[in-house]
Image 1 (cartoon, one colour):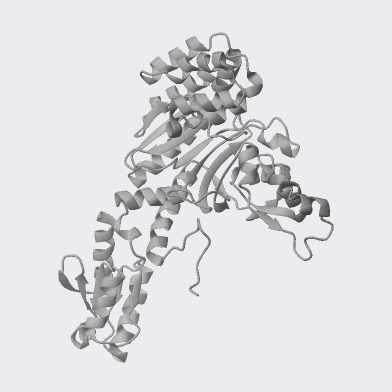
Image 2: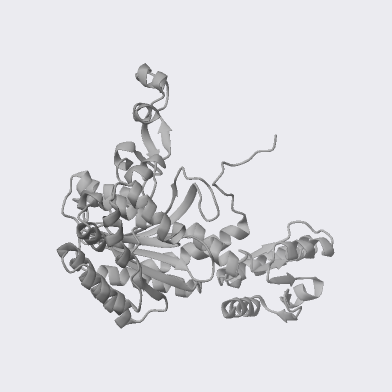
Length: 457
């Protein structure tokens, strides 16, 4: 039987890894540019750390790890017979795979609070796991690239994070729509219709507006216990249109009786004004239905969509003033963003936006003409590698046709040939595989030609 991998996971070939590393390196460089430092946390966390942080739907999507050894020992036999899987899982599993990087980060901050200098700015690039139904753009194992700052209430952090998002996608050449909302605005909605206790029900339903449409959202709101009158009161809010400024004014007018709602509008004004003053390549959009379905956001909510590819959110985030409170450290404010590297990878593939250096690791392959020529080639490669050019030599002195077929298959941009006459001059015949142009060059000259050509592309 042919081996396979679990649904919702993927293998990545060397060519694909070159592309993924281009994404990771781009994001990492921008994070560092804004003063964020890297940390890592374990793949698995105690379930007590993870449970209850992502809402009821999120809890269902946690991958739980069976206790080692006799995991059934001590389990309630009544629960087994009753098929009560949720309560049984709590007895059989002490650990789970992390669902995101934010909750482990909150745990890290609380655990290491005495060692940290606040405000603390960190970035983290690691895989996360979700027991989701696999579909296009949705995987069970995927990488997140997060940047968070904790220990500061300042909205300057939001402005900087939005600049980071803009800069990353500018470098990747992906055109984006940067959607903003504020959880306080959503709380204002709930207050306005006299259902502050229904904030989660309202946000979970209206967050699906783009996917299922207004009619189905209204039906879901009724199913979740809202009255017909409450649903009708929400309609003008969900129908807000116009320029960014006009929509903010309309929101302020509709939420005039809600103190928390007006505070949300005020924060949105400050963040959008700060970002616009600095200039933005992205299209900035206010989306009052945006909730991101997660319980821990308390202020700004951020979501990024690609303009030229139909795919889900490629970046998201927001402010979570009370997240560390669940770990016994109340009053610590945080705000962060998370890049979905796997979806970004799919977008770059769809639009073919990778630069030449992200397509292959090897920049030049030396042809092997025999032992003496190979030795001379190895000496040249050592010199070129010291100048930052990645090289390889075909390991066997096979027929020229076979070696060139290999060079084409792995898509190396240059091939170098060192025969007897080249050896005598200390040079190589460097062939550009795209143009067919060939030059006789010293190793340092060849390194310069290759570097300039790839940098230009």
